Image (cartoon, rainbow, N blue to C red; front, side):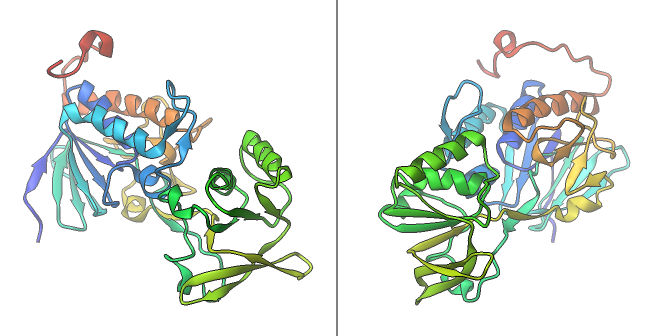
Length: 339
């Protein structure tokens, strides 16, 4: 049974950093937003996967934890009174006779809006699990696919598997609190930021991180959900046993656009192709911003998503207020509601 339809100017799908900043940008143009996310709290992957991980490329913040960034974005959006619908996925987008939209969620929530901004990151996500026997026995107690609180690994023997940014960054971070960090990768080269890789090799030379390369995961040892060791193997089949209290496999995320894939928008490689000038999709009135948006020269950076949020908000304005001229003012001139 569906709930009564609520009305807003814009529906924002995705409550990650880019979606939250889109609330602010819409608010500055006097457009109220309803925000939808399948996760139970605002913040997207930043809050769900790495709340304590530092981010270094946010303008004005030499270093900021992901959770702190989310907290500030929520506070920045708060004056515009967004309505949050969290913990349930959007299931349907329907057009109305007058060119507006009806958003429906799996929980039966319905909302009417004049424009839709998709800020869904990579869509719904889950970890790519390594094909190891018995791995389910250890998940949640000794095997983790993301780090919530770094302190939970203090004094523990941590094995990290993977060669990308997540694996390298967490090896560097957890080396500060863990008894031992061992990084398993099947190649000698890492697919991470060059500066981080250089720091990793420095820490390995200093004996603070063990580089277990070139090896890949082979088996798990332990009882009652508690790991005692991770067995790794090289390309020749030679095995090695690495003592471990926990394993962090970082092999990326399996993503799924879900119902978004059937909304009449142009999808390529799980991304939505948009006009870079407006972030408009192939469906009139629907925009896409952040990591899910695709156009020539696209950079998957939070700051790029922030700029796209502004473009989409300005492009949505004439749909929300037909015939009304937009007299744009800078925030330093305009201020905030009640300010």
